Amino acid sequence: MTSFRVILKFFYFFLFCLLVIPTQSLVLLFTKGKHSYHLPRLWNASICSVFKLNYEIIGKPSFDKQTLFMSNHLSYLDIPLLGSIIKASFVSKSEVAKWPVFGYLATLVQTVFIQRKRSATGNHVNILQERINAGDSLIIFPEGTSTSGLNVLPFKSSLFSLAINDNNENLYIQPVTIKILEIDGHAPQSKEEHNIYAWPFDDDIELSKHLTRFAKITKTKIRITFHPTLKASDYNDRKVLAKACYEAVNSGL
Image 1 (cartoon, rainbow, N blue to C red):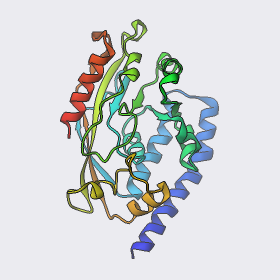
Image 2 (tube, rainbow, N blue to C red; image 1 turned 60 degrees about the vertical axis):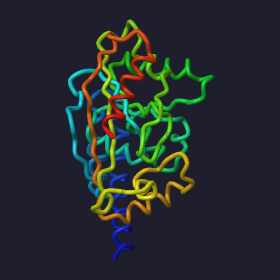
Image 3 (cartoon, one colour; image 1 turned 30 degrees about the horizontal axis):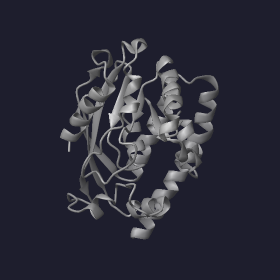
Image 4 (cartoon, rainbow, N blue to C red; image 1 turned 120 degrees about the horizontal axis):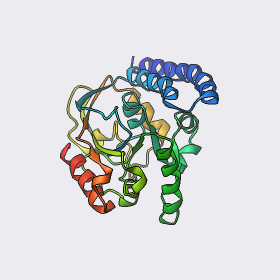
């Protein structure tokens, strides 16, 4: 029964991909504005449904103003999770663009790929500023890597330099916390149980094997906490802003 359930989930996953890829490619030929997020949002919601990725929302997502959503990061599964709720582009490390299937899907949802090495900091800040100038909201994982979700790593303050800019007077920052509540009907008690959903940097399991293991689970419940927004123009020190966001996200665990 478990094997059949896994096969069925992957069948629907690839079916949705076949439907979405040509359609979204066509949409992007005509617009990269707010209307280009409708189909990816529907696709993300469908993926959550197929893999029984359930969630509850605490707080109110910032939909009515341009926002940088700063979230802790557990897994590639955070993408359909947050993407089914927020109309925004993800910021991801450049290596993701080379992933089979997922890399191409990431380009279709207008992901911004950046190099995380220190020498490229100025370049990726310029790239992200261009997207902000275009009016886009962005979803950023300022830990710089994924974790098991047991704690929050210190945020990389360089990513907050985007907000400390006189041109971003009407930009807001919203801290977001992702917390695993249940795996197969019970709260995870160990790092190994957390890692059924999470895919942390220190886990050497391949993505395909991790997704197959996750597909065997009957249901997962995640809590997403949207903390009160911070106005970027109220800060003039990126490290102070990074700390404020970190403390808010950490409080959600």
